[in-house]
Length: 417
Image (cartoon, rainbow, N blue to C red):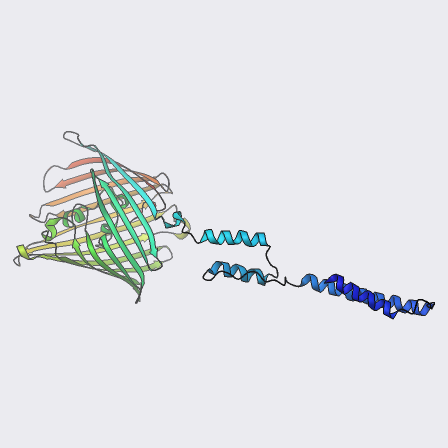
């Protein structure tokens, strides 16, 4: 193209010159020189325009259905340049490999937690002083853009069981969350937590006495909805087949019904309070048993935003009432706890809990006081030492010292639930 332009310009110059047999005058020479300068300027302009023009051959069209390749082709064309054959071949190879599913992306997030404890009692023969309380393996993953799953496998006492395994949907109409599967139920505050995450080494006495040794859990459906208005409020409704202690519902296998309402208020920039209530109901027609459990909960937390890593104070408590009626009659038993934790600095947390509970059958009162000290060695490991004073009815008090070591690996460190 450039050679053609130069030939045309040279021919033009030749045609404008006088014949060879004539001698050009000085004026003619000056005129020719001026024309040559004009033609040279035009040539420079043409060359500059040709240098700025995009390639005549557009990049190859993206394969049908390959959105990434289409975007790359559009970006390349907008940039004003084409790709060489070698680059196109490399991109085609990359695109072909990119369509294959990456195995690492298919794997769920996996975490594991170890919980080992040691005990020493104040009197009697020392036995079973070391307890590999639980080893838990958790799997979490997004199933698709609409749903997720959590599965927790518990290895405890030589037995393998599914502590929780459920799928949940969060984008349903009305901003409702739906859970399907087996889960720890939303009774109060601490029952929902996994055991290694509670502030002490064990659940409060009221929970283990009324709801079962490992708390309340079941398999079924759960609906959750959060809404505002004079604070923030959460409503949870669950229908399950209870998997907890058979004494609570008579091991009937019938549905149980739970309703939980939690109210949250931000008092100031560093303090918030929550108050909630729970109602649980289940029956066993074979023994004419009707079980009702009600609960009230509160929590007050002070956490200064600029010092939250070093200082935090929480006061929480629950009051439970259990009524088991056979043929329409039965007593009401009470139980509850009050506990407090204070973060001394970045690593140490000082805690104390007081428990009170009446046994479901005869109303025997048990009281206990548990001070504790927890050291967070790191994000993955914490160590705890606690003392337990316990008195059953008017019998002499029992004393116990416990040490606990909890560690975790994986992306979810010491997840509450």
